[in-house]
Amino acid sequence: MVTPASTVANAELNSQVIPVSYDRSHLKTRMVHLGFGAFHRAHQALFTHLVAERGDSDWGQCVVKLFSGMDEIEALRRQDHLYSVVEKGADGTHSRLIGVVTEAMHPRLDGIDAVLEKLAEPQVAIVSLTITEKGYCADPASGRLDAGNAMIQQDLASPARPVSAIGYLVQALKLRKERGLAPFSILSCDNVPENGRVARQVVLDFARRLDEELAAWIAEQVTFPSTMVDRIVPAATADTMAEIADLLGVADPCGIACEPFRQWVIEDHFVAGRPQWELAGAELVADVRPFEEMKLRMLNGSHSFLAYLGYLGGYRHIDETMADEHYRRAALALMTREQAPTLDMPAGVDLNAYAESLLARFANPELKHKTWQIAMDGSQKLPQRFLQSVRCHLAAGTDFSHLALGIAGWMRYVHGTDEQGQPIEVKDPLAGRLQAICQRHGLNVSVVPELLAVEPVFGTDLAANPRFVAAVTAAYQQLLTLGARAAVAAL
Image (tube, rainbow, N blue to C red):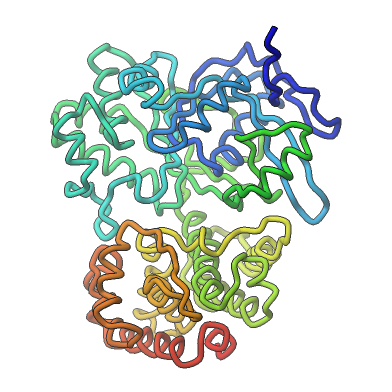
């Protein structure tokens, strides 16, 4: 007789692990989530799990990975769709099992048609997304569908065999319309400003290229709530996985570690119901935009600042960077003096207190959040995290020296070599274009105008603004002359 391998589903776990407390057989697959990444596991799925623990909820999730991650889907199936979340903070470490996932799929395991049929099932009321900025296939400058995107071109040519998340959504909605089924809501959970509006725009742009009648039905019937999500979830490393196995008493290839803090602000606009996420601490609001901008500029913006300049300065993790008092002071000044003044927040929101809380979270020594990980996909992130604030300062005639150094740090980083001459693995959708520019100029300030002319990142206005060009050029020269650490200290 073959003994099944031990998993979190059948092993005797360590006593401190919080088990699933509800009847999982009561769950129905009422949500499909595209993107079973670390963040979803530690955030949206956890919120839905807590709702099931605290109320009479039948909201289960089918998780789908469209590209990589086939091994994770197979592992999740082997352990009855259970996985662990480990919260690591100053007051200790807490582990729990998450039981809200009911099914797991991958096109290469199950076929494209099976994934589409799952999205078209009548009881599916929400399709949620963590597909990263680039997964929306949107032009960063206009927010419209990038019709030149290779995946979009392929999906428009063969809409019944989609590859992109946008192609899957439109084809699934087409099936529901043809079958007389109610639509679902599309819930974006990515760090994209007005992420619901962006999702709506690219879905409608795609649908209009196929079928005007379908596009009209989607525009009238489907809702696209915006959300603001916040939790620091570093990418899992071998050390992380070994620690999780030690805490649980068994290996969990789908386990994830994160900080204790979590926040979810959701626009309450759903066509077919939703879980009572407020039971788990989510904030349901009429307008998410102020909270989105606060998080993108203060948290994500300072994170990117620390990532580029920290990596160049030789720091491989955010907590190491924060241990350098010059970087800590610079991050606080960036948030309070250059980002906070560009925000228009509801009464009662204390941005100085928010900034101080972010410093404490960044300094958490348990997380080991890699600067390299945060530095990824910068061409997609700079417009929201830095450039909108810069535009506010240019209009007001106010100082933006920290933002300028952050932008210069990105330019120096995408050159592809660090300050010791070692190669940097630059992960970015525009990496080829950016590095070709850098190679033409070498480490010289002459690179700045050509990088500023990359319209998908900077639009057309910033490259034409002499004050902006001068500020970034001076900051870039300072990085070349002093190095990242001294340039940050000079702020």
